[in-house]
Length: 472
Image (cartoon, rainbow, N blue to C red):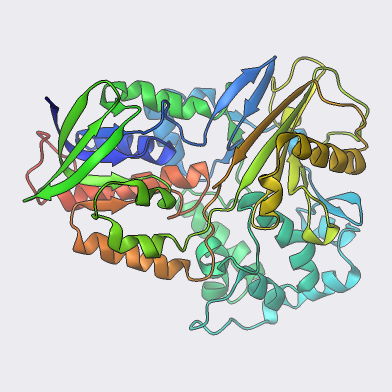
């Protein structure tokens, strides 16, 4: 016999998007239930101590870009625990001709840097005088950057930057979808340089900070602090190891049959919010989402593997005086970049030790991410030996593969989102969220969760809900 549950919103997926959505919905007065198929919440966010090292298996940090982030952290009692990156991690390096150069962050530093040629520097001064593209043509990020800034800027600034964020390729990513604020600068101001200056005033009014100037943060015990706090807050409403057996709709209600390996449940819900990766929709039972599957399957998730090296005593190597480094494709290396984790935040390694987090694979070299661990170790160690003059083997090695890591906002992504919106309109009470929509970072997911929660409250306020009061 099934246990009966009634709720306003059933959230499928217990990652940062699902948990944050539950918080904002309950704050508005709606009842929620979160179904998570794994034994734990948090999704790709996972932090753990290994022999005195703090290892981040997924995201390492995020940017303090919006008051919504602080609102959430204040609500769940962790705002005071936020830890901002050390000042010495401000330097960000990019490899060129086998040498690490600091990425210039000011106009004067740009003029002085050896990272860009004189030709590339003069090319940048033309940017304010270049007209906008045809709004009817969707440009890739590569096309956009070459047109406005030139090939060299694409090769030695944007390409490695994209590898570090999306593990993607600028020749495939849509500038409008993947970097909407960059796209809007040209559309609104006609120039990236003009837009950066004038747009800063508008962001200040909205109490938002650009990603270029936002502070990087995490927590002393890692990013899992966020998902752990949310899970504790709503523990009674989270069902782990949930296997959904059937989803149906009767009148205005959704009926979800699921079990957790011990008990069977029948869940009556006014709405469904899905925050699972889009490739997981095909695993859901029945034909409810079948019409949308061909559209969602167009979103590519390349494999990425995290290779973590921990040294209990600092080895001989170049100074770790920055955030880390990124590798352009033109350098023909087998890694995407390395974060100097122990420089960015305190207590990431035992006293006197260091921690390095390297990423391999992505859209650039997906086959490398899928290699066996011994081969991955050799690849990473070889590149770090050459780039960082690092000769000693690490004391701790952690290798975490993500076979389907980050959704790519490639050309055509907006058309996919348009189809998702059509599906939602023809299926009232169904809402799709997650990092394929609204941005891929942890901060983006939190902001998107509040937007989605407000939308759900607005739409469901027209119907009779299980909760007694809803704050619209």
